Length: 300
Image (tube, rainbow, N blue to C red; front, top):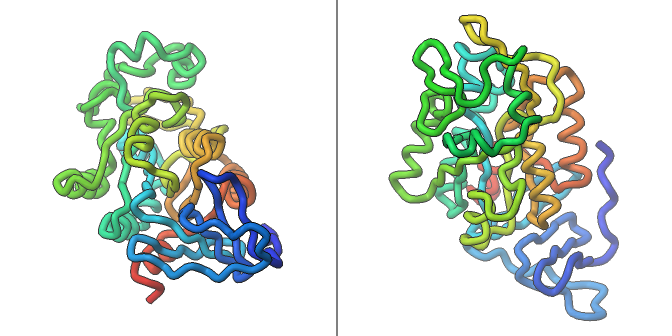
């Protein structure tokens, strides 16, 4: 991706209530804390506050965020999508360690950790659109709420083993739940904020969140590689949960940062590349877990 040129003078985007400020140095201030004085062609960068960090991102930029108004949105890192008994997803499994590095660092600096996962109720089974129901079935068999072999429970229902976070991520969530820093948020569509009054929408509004860091599976919109189950129940999925939530967040006016080493897909080559290209070029910014940890540690 070609980096856009740095601005030649300090530039403010947005409106009185929601705005960014970009500096010729490459810093983009997302904290909404200091307007550029009217008519000013230059403006010194305000000092970094204790609840702010600056994260290096692609495109020769840094973004300044307010950690008290930032949430890490981790999508669908569940057994059904990752566990080797459920499917072959090596790139998804490769996201686990980066998340285990980034989550504790961000949590310690006041960032809200949100685990956004499929977790359906029996009532929701009656209200899910037919296109979505069909996408999670194969030849008219299985689908949401169906019983999975091997003690995995009903497909993507709340409280079932297949709906738990994969391996060490479940343990990491439980650590955060004990300290009150992590939230488990159920969703019933590909996107976590497909409409107002969803669980994620309410959580973000109630906590005054403006900036969202994203990670999870699956990233893009089209998959030609179905998942598998050891007893032959195949599900033809169209993975788009990360991108769906990212795009909705972008439309709703949230700041978007996507962790490149924390997101994966099962689609053919090119699917993830398109997501990263648009995420860094249009929706927001691209970074990774190493740069997150470095930012939290003060650039050390």
